[in-house]
Structure formats: C-alpha cells, structure tokens
Image 1 (spheres, each protein chain N blue to C red):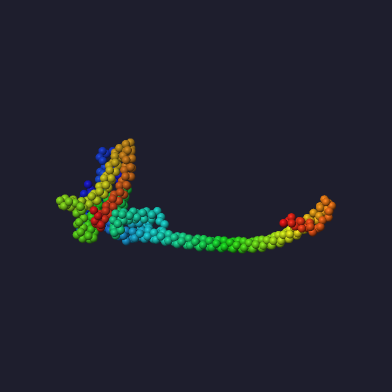
Image 2 (cartoon, each protein chain N blue to C red):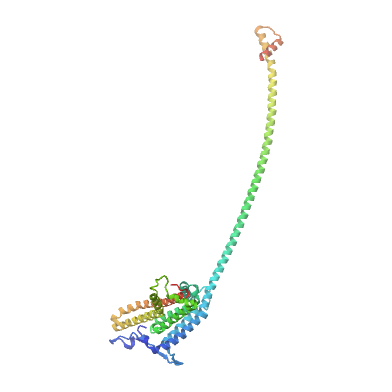
Length: 160
Length: 257
C-alpha cells in the first residue's frame, strides 16, 4: 500500500506546508479581501440606491400633498364664490319680490278703497231708487199720489 | 485515471492491473534540504497545481471588481459566500476571524479532490499523511484557541453537566478519548473515501479491459455512473472536512456541549 511508505511522508509534508501556507497567504491577503470588498461595495451601492429611491418617493409624496392642498383650496374658493353669488342673487330677488309685493298690496288696498266707496255710494242711491219706485207703484196701483216724504220715512223704517 | 495502468499490463493477460499503482509517489526531482527529503513528487506537483489554479481563479475572476459580476466572478463570490455562511452559521461572527483558514482548507481539499478526478492525474488527498496533517493542523489549532480563550476552564469541556457524580470519571475518560480521536476520524474519512473510490474505478477499468469489446460495456457503463458519484463524493468530503472544522472551532470558542 503506497500510503504506508514511510519514506514518502517527508516530501509530501514539506510540499503540503509550502503549498498550503502559500495558498493561505494568497487567500487571506489578496483574494478574500478583494471579494469581500466587491460584495461590500455592491451592498453599499444597492443601499444607496434604495435610500435615494426612498428620498425621491418622499419628495413625490410631498408634491402630491401640496397639489392636493392647492386643489382643495381652489375648490373651497370656487365654492365660496358660488355661494356668494347665490346669496347676492337671492337677496336681490328677495328685495325685488318685497317691492313688487308691497306695490301689489298698495294697489290692492286702493282698489279695495274704490270698491268700498263705490259700494257705499251705490247703497246711498238704493233708498232713493226704492222711494221713486214705491211712489210710482203706489200711483199706478191706487191712483193716488203720495207725499214723497212719507214714503221715504216708510222705507227708512223698513230698512231698520 | 482509471485506465492509467491498463496499457502496462494489457488486455489478454489474466492478471489484473494493480489498482494501487495509481497511489504511488514518484520522485520527479529528488531534493534534500537540511537532511529532509523534500523531493518534488507527483503529489507535490498536484498540490502546486491546486494552489496555483485556485489563486489564479479567484484573483483573475475578481480582477475586474465588477459591480455586476460575470460568470467567473459570480462563481468566486458564490464560493466565498458559501464558506462565509458555513462559518457564520456554525461558529457565529466570532469565528469570522478564522474564515480565511477555513476557506483555504475547503478550497484546497476540494481542488485536490476534483483534480484527482481527471484521468491519469494524482489524488493528493488519497494519502493518509496529507489528510492527517491537515486534520492535525485543525486539531492543534482548535485546542490552542480553546485554551487561549478559556484558560484552564477549557478543561470543563470534558466534564458533561447534569450527570451523576458516580458516572463522571467514566464520562470524562470517554469525552477525552472522543476529543483525541477527532483528527483520526477527520483524516481517515477523507483519505478512505478518496482511496476507495479511485481503487474501485481502477478495478472496474481493469474489468473493461479484461472483458474486451464484447463484455466490457457493462463495467464501462457502471464506471460512467460511478464517476458521477465520485465527483459528488469529492465535493461532499471537502464540505464535510470544512464543516467539521467549523464545529470544532465552535466548541473551542463557545464550549457548547
């Protein structure tokens, strides 16, 4: 069994030490720090990019908030203007209506006055017409002319 | 590598090609430094190849340092994250200090296992001395970390809590033995898996040659499927080696029991 040839042990051990120590030095001093650097750098870069993206996102959100605030303000202003206009118009309409209403009331009152005076006037003439009619009727029926004053008194007493 | 040896012994001879021949150490460049045999062997060549290809892969793929990674850089980053998560989940953030070591261990074992899957290549991790040396580094390192962090309090690690006093001596002995066998189980697991898999492939490769054009298809089909399994084992054993290292590290740092 070649593995148990003791005189072959020494050269194998010597070269194992040489190659293993050499490899260890290359790995520990050069290769591994370099790979670690590359990986670290990449991790940093990704983190930086993520931070930047986060910052931009926050900026966007601020801009959106500002836009929405301005929009709400403009909307409120438009609403106020509309309300103002509506109120003004309503006040104007109310004033006009009151004016027209008072005019109507005034003309109605004067009309009523006129009707009232016409009515009293008419009523004042009723007795006269009645006495004339009564005297004419009496004359026709009994052929007797009556004293007008008597008739008037009679009518007056009837009216009471 | 399954058929590496087939030509030497050839079809038609009744003898099987030696399935252990692939594990032999060949001295390509005999060398002696301070009385120690430091010859450049086929094993050393594949260790160097593993270290260089790993370094080249990780350094070249990330040389662009691209923010959006290409295929190779993605692969390097996935490997990094895979081991980093393994350490983070099993040891916690305190263990990230030892992440370069765990990464080196995992990638070295994985590269050696995978290079071994190439035909005619040599599998470094199929030698117990190599896997044992790696396991011993882990074992000694973890023990030193444990004592450095907790002082003599680390010895409490061997005393399970909530046990009747009468059983305590027995349990402490068992705990100490299980702790001491860690490097053995860690190294034998990797070495035995690698050796068994490659031996199996070689044996079935021998069957293909012996049975020839008429009967060789059945073992050939088996070998294709088994090669797929071996690739999985190559990855899995590297993963198991690394994750057990993490668990041992966690024991030493936090003394969870």
